[in-house]
Length: 173
Image (cartoon, rainbow, N blue to C red; front, top):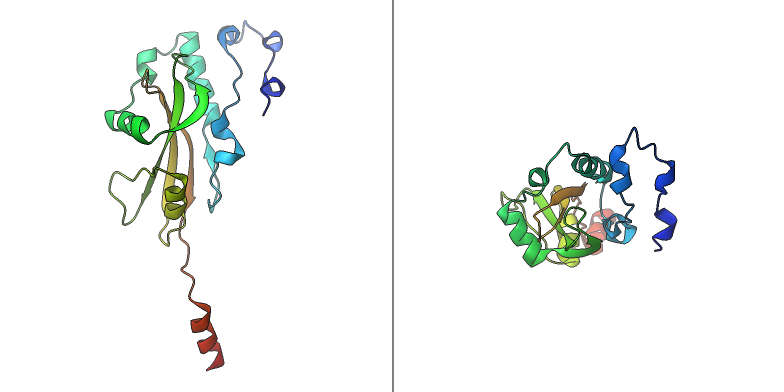
């Protein structure tokens, strides 16, 4: 995917209204790419890109300090270091480290703190459960502890298929 199509020219931004815009840069996030989205979501996938943009704009405008947004929990940092999947995007705060994405899944018969699937296959297995689950994808910078919720979606609640031979017996009786 080419980044040149998605870059917004800063010439068209009124710098009196948005003085921080001159420091902004357009970034195409591979996290938002369709290849990374879930295929088993049974409802809407809620993306939080606009919230992230507004948060970073407040930091650029001096309304928030870096310490206010770079405060990831130690458990989230541990999961990011050990289980995180690279996004291909540099951290918008420190511009030094590549962001990683951590997915948490919550539902009945799962640990109270949720579970972090290590692979795509584990995530798909959790999404195809009979019980409903809530999935959350969080982007994390392991360098400066920046973190932000990228998207959330509902999955699961699938009915188990009965073997066809059992279905035929009922129909034939």
